[in-house]
Amino acid sequence: MATTADRWRRLADDLTRRVDGVPPGRWDDPAPCEGWVARDVVRHLVEWMPALYLPAVDLPVPDLPSVDEDPAAAWRAADAAIRALLADPDLARRPTSTRAGEMPLEDLVAMTGLMDLLVHTWDLARATGQDETIDADEASAFLAGIEPWDAALRSSGYYGPRVTVPDDADDRAKLLAFTGRRP
View 1 (spheres, rainbow, N blue to C red):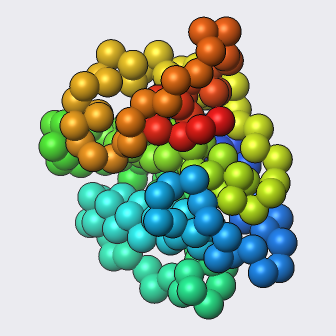
View 2 (view 1 turned 135 degrees about the vertical axis):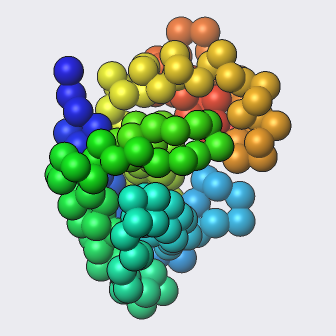
């Protein structure tokens, strides 16, 4: 079974390929998230992930490059900081306090960050005309895990209204539709 660190690496590598593949002049193209542009997809990840994960294990958030000046460098720095946390067994297993209760850091990352990487990889790809393929196994696992929480997640304000897709749509499309995206 893959560890959270393994899953992070795989999903972050997919996102990094999209970040590095943004064509010149496309960082301000509209993203699927209402009111966002491609740069905002990266900004979202760079701003919340290090700010949640590092302090959760009593580490300072490092100074990161500006998303406005260099979104790719900002993403790479945030990704490197989180990879370092997950690569250190003591930090990865360190208990954190969350609204969902006590859990090791690696469980917090798995619960809050991995699906964000997956879905926002698609957002960035869609915004910038790149390959929109996301990991099918991860999409299936996340869909199975979040569907029972539909009402609670919908009321959180983090997801738009669920989009209707055909019954025979694959789990990637169903996951994206669940989160309010139009695959």
